[in-house]
Image (cartoon, rainbow, N blue to C red; front, side, top):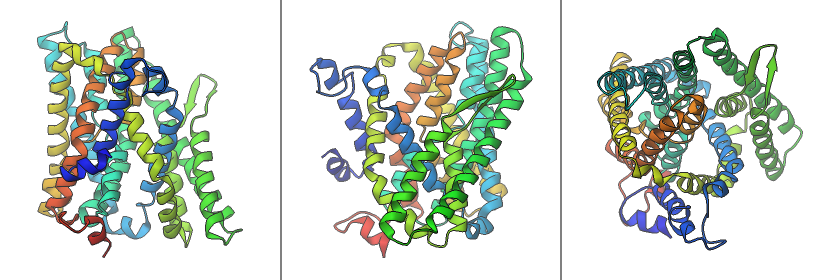
Length: 406
């Protein structure tokens, strides 16, 4: 119902799903304390985390489909350069701004918290971006580049966060660990790519035994679910803690599968249709998870506003400079940075890891505030940027989705 309202306001459906979650959350309808009417506590929302993890797995699997060799040959090197540079520039910009804030007001923000927030700023939410692209059937040079950059951004963001968090931990506790700062982050990326590649290859081998479309789609869905489950495993090899990145594993699975399976495009389309209700649930639960109590702390809002401004500037000018370096067209150069503003699950996962810092709760609250703003505003900005470059048809009496299908 809310998506019908947001359509009249020319807002993406993602915004409606997030607002629905806020209304159903523990700070609106849930606050009434009526059992079954919304979520009565954040614990109830967190109990559905398996749904959000599964949805992220399917989203990452779909994004992996963008890494087809034909597209990589056309813009692979440019996407890699842009993906790495914009993430690094964003981290540097936010680090500088927040470190200056620490030097001026050390009682407001600690140095470890400033460094950690700088790394978290590099992360972009793939889910909101993908949902906007799907809803409006967006297609064109900017859309294709955006999907590649978002995927690369997650890998770079993971590495930047691991290194920065290791440095922040060393500053907090007075000792640095090479294992935590260098070895474990690199090992996580390598293990994730290997597991994802293996699952993509296995999926193709299993698909070869079936010809029915319904059975092949069922196997594809089951394999993504299995891949999500395997990516949650953690173990130790001696003193080294080994884990996987859910996003990287599922993206690699989708990448390998789409490049070695002749019918992957048709299968991906069918899987996309099956996962739409799951994606709606993902955004509703994400909206319900947003803790509105953080709005009562003025320091959180102050640092959050500074973080949002610095991160937005880093994403915009980082993308602009890297696009200029790779000689992208002016429309892409001017608009790519705006489409990279949404931030959600990946950043919240990083903030949860940062909870072990002395002021990790403050870091989490700042990120929560930023996610609240970015998730409500980001999808609309992404839509407007894609409209500006003509990759979404303007909405009128005829559905933009139908127009874009032609």
